[in-house]
Image (tube, rainbow, N blue to C red):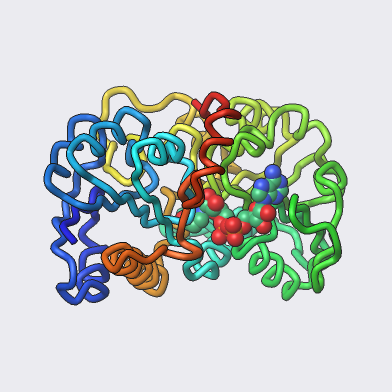
Length: 348
Ligand code: NAD
């Protein structure tokens, strides 16, 4: 297959090359996909994208016009892809349904520990030979209540790790009603009311968009710790900022940011105008922000590359990609017709 891979970082190349074994003719480019750079896909069968690429209806139309028949995202999340538009143009879609969920789960817990024990401040002070303990007091995780929203691949492992710390783990998932192992299933409202730490592990969908807004925050405990390693728009960031200032949210850990597109994954240190909302968040002492790096382990990178190449292999031999299929029509004509009839306005 002739393929162009967008938004490729230097560190990814070796994993893709190893997985590909020269089976597909892949052009690796660092540019993000957008209306302009779509031209690089001219004459290609497939494009590979990542979370902050623009895979909107207009871009898909352009890709289809140039003969592209397949789009594979090197991520679990597919909220950046207009699936309906792809279906209408007969473009097949695939993702990486699950890769090393431990990578994201471990980063989630690392954020909770770093926030709680003030590791960033402690390290900064120690490096300047200030070894005072003032302002470094944390709390024991043991016997605290951790609320996990979304008990899929990642949420389940997060729950397992916190359980290992001796936490009481409660969970909410639209698809899981009963107690799973050591996770007590509760309603979302109960989870908000009871949790000392809340961590989000759902995909971004119209139902989860701004899941945490001022009404949700109102239900939470005073000084709650909130961690989001899933998608930025699960939080209404302006409401979260207000709650940080009031003290309702005591700690905030973000690996994703509502307006990260065009910002994350690049060096913006010398930009004249920096995102003011993100700056306000960062100025807050109890906020830890990482640049969408939860997936970034060697194991996860190899698994992402392997699954992506396997998706191309399947398409080349006219096979469905199985669990990795994220086509809106789910490869069935009737369903896409229903979807078109029930079409709702996509997320901003
Ligand atoms: P998954 O599909 O295995 O699990 C998601 C769970 O969320 C499912 O159990 C589903 O039933 C549940 N869910 C869906 N809608 C819900 C709702 N409205 N309320 C409650 N639960 C709901 O996915 P996963 O592998 O665990 O990944 C979760 C998310 O993590 C991805 O969608 C992606 O956005 C994010 N992610 C982030 C990174 C990163 O580097 N920061 C890496 C990978 C994935």
